[in-house]
Length: 387
Image 1 (cartoon, rainbow, N blue to C red):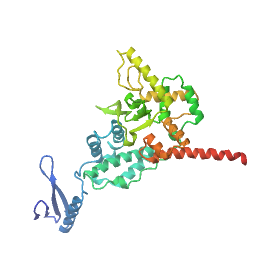
Image 2: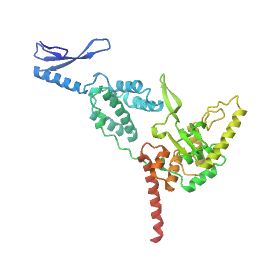
Image 3: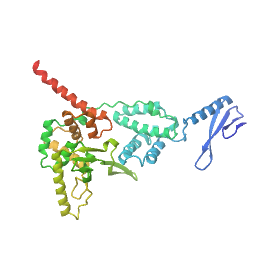
Image 4: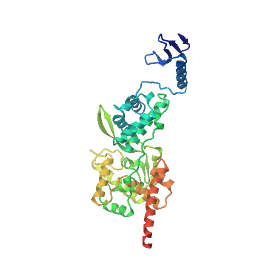
C-alpha cells in the first residue's frame, strides 16, 4: 500500500486487481474523520480521480454534504437560513412550492450533487404537460433558483444548474392588469360613492396612488397637514402560515418590499380637508366610546379602533362597481388610474415612478406605454370620418 502524508490520501490495491484511493475531507459532528473513496482498474485512474476531486474542492466545486437531497436542502434553506429574513407571506409562498412540487416528488429525492439542468428542465416540461400554468412553473423556478443559489454560496454545490434551465414563457393576458378608469368612469365612480362609508379611502387611493396595504396601514403620524403630504413606510399584508400541520390566517404590519416603496406623496388639498374633518369625527367617536375603542393611531378604523382589512375594502370596492354597472377593475387599478391621470397632465415618467414607489422605471413605463397606446388608437379612430 502506498500512502501520502498530511491527510492527502492513500492508495491501495485489492487482490482482485482493483485499486482504491481514499481522501480525508474533514470531520463530522462527532469529530470522526470523513473519507472520500475512489475506485479504478489502474493506479493512474484512481490518482486522476483523486487529483480531479482535490482540484474541484479547492475551487469550491464540491458539495459539503454529498448525501443531502433537494427536498432536504430546500427545507433547510427555507426554514433555517431564510426564516428570519423573509416576510411570513413570502415564506408561505415558498412553502407552497415545497409542499406541492418538491416534498415527496421524484425530483425532491435527487441528491444536490446529482442535480442537473436537464433533470430540472424535464421536470418543468412535465408539469406544463400535466396542466400546470407557465406562471406557476416560472414562480417555482424562481424559488428553486434562489434556494440553489444559496447552496452554491455556502459551497454545498459547485454550480447552480437553474442558471442553465429555460423556464416557460408567461404570456400576460389582457386582463385587469392595466385597466384603468376613463375620465367618465372616474366621475361616475366619484358620484356613486358620495355616501359610502369607505368613500375617503377610495378617493385617497385615487388621489395618491398608494397600494391597498399601504392605505389601511396609514397612521395619523404619517400625514403632514402643513406640507399636504403623507409618508408611506409600512403595509398590511395577508399570509398563511403552517402551525403544527395546520394552515393559519395571518395579517401583519410589515415594512415595504423595496426601499423605493418608502416615499412621500402629495395629497390633493380637497382630500386633505376631508382628512381633517375625518380626524375630528374620529376623535369625537373615541371620546364617546372609550370603553371599547383601542387607539392604535390608524387613520381608518373599524368601531373598535382596528385597521380596516384589505379584503373588506376590496370587496366593498368591487360591490360598488357591480351595483352601479361600472366596468370591473381590481382595487389596484385605482393606483394605475392615478398614474394615468398624471401622464395625461404631462407629468414626467421619472416623477411618476417616484410617486408610485416603483423600484424600476420599467414598471412605470409599462403603464405609460399602455396608456399612450390606447390614446394612439383613439386618435387614429377619429380619422374614420375622412374615409
